[in-house]
Length: 364
Image (cartoon, rainbow, N blue to C red):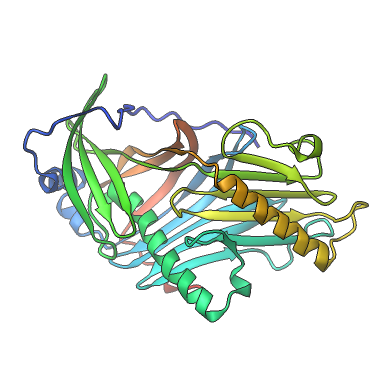
């Protein structure tokens, strides 16, 4: 299904075009922002739930729309649940977040999911590099993976929390320094340098007039998008790679289709592999064919990964609406290298609701 991103009326400040600060204090700027967002009402916020729609741009240029859910319970519980892949009338979900010092990272798929007589391989990218199948990891590998994933999920939550609460999460301390002013035709913004554990370094732009958070900006490697087909549409003759950085296509067994998407800097990496047959004739892949397929895919991924450019990532916060006295952004748009890639549209947000503890069940 094709959709169009909602237009976000927000100034596109140049991240590099900064004027030296006039002796402002970063913590005072953030204090003014928290006052504008709700003051005492914001300080009394202990939990939040939200539901809505995610619009994502596909490699073909279309936009898909799927549901998502977010829940947080301060100080140390957070969950994002979103559709990873829609398969007919069934959906595969990704649950991501943390509960205290433990990571939540799970691919939730229907037990009766069918792939047209073939097999489906779902693997999650490791913050340590590459892609892994959690079901095949040793206890030592899983412990290392969980530690890195916990840090990564805290980073992702921090990017959400900065726009919603203008404060560092209790579970992920951040430092703030005033970087200067940025100016656009629509006005001026105070720019705050934000740093944290694991090379976390972003810039937060705050509207000087309204004191509302406008956007985050940072530099990182571009995402990797890989499409593997049997030489048909999208694969090109002999699996020739399509034009454009960060994309690669190559030939595989009969009727195979693979999509791999990864975020920069050890960010979210999700790999979806659908195998509808192997060796031609629509027959199911043998274990040996399946192993060869995955090995070739990983080799091509590593080759393409080495060629990725460093580009600018942005997260925009917009459409602030009052919920129980707290102003919360109801639209969050992400762009990479100047191109919109994803938009979260909240249809409902609740402040301090009762949340089922099962929401934050830790991945086994």
